[in-house]
Length: 226
Image (cartoon, rainbow, N blue to C red; front, side, top):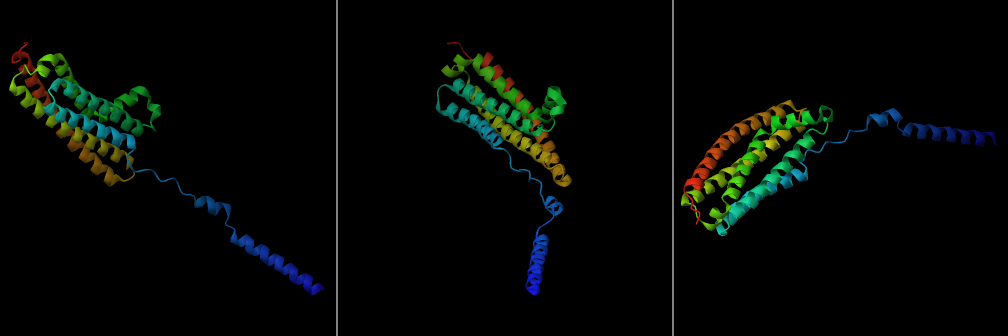
C-alpha cells in the first residue's frame, strides 16, 4: 500500500515538473513579440488620384481632336486634372506628415511648399490654360482662331502630359525616400532621383509658360470675333 502511494506521488511530481518545463516563461513570450510590419505599398488613394490626373489630360487631348468644342474639352479635362493633382498633393503629404502633427498648420504648409514646388507649378500652368480658354471660349469653340493656335495647343498638351507623369514620379520618389529613412543607401538614391526629376520639371514648366504666352498672343491678335 505504501509502495503504491509512493509511486503515485512520484507520478504527480513528475507530471507537474514536465508541465512546468513545457510552459514558456512570460519573459520569453514578451521577447518573441514582433512589431507590426510597416506597409511599403502606396495607398490606393494616391494611385487613384495619379490615374485620374493623367486621365483628365488624355480626355482633353482625345475630345479636343474629335469634338468641335475645343475649349470645353480643355476646361473639363484640365479642370479634372487640377482636382486630381490637389487631391494627390493633400493625400500624399497628409500621409507623410501624419507623425508630425506637432509642427502645426504653418509647419505643414511649409513642408508642402518645400517638397511640392513641381506639383504647385503644374497646377498653376494648367490653371492658366483653363483661364485662357474661358476668356476666349466663344472664339475657340467656333473655330475663329488661327491654325497656329491648335498646333501650339497640341504641343502644350503633350508637354503637360509629360510634366504630369514626371511630377507623379517625383512625388513617388519623395514618399519612397521618406518611408525608407532607416535604409540610408536607398533613401539617398530616392533623394537623388527626386532632385534630378525636379530639375527636369522646372525646365518643362518654363517651356510651358513660354507656349502659354504664344497662345495668348495668337488668341488676342490673330482671332476674330465673327
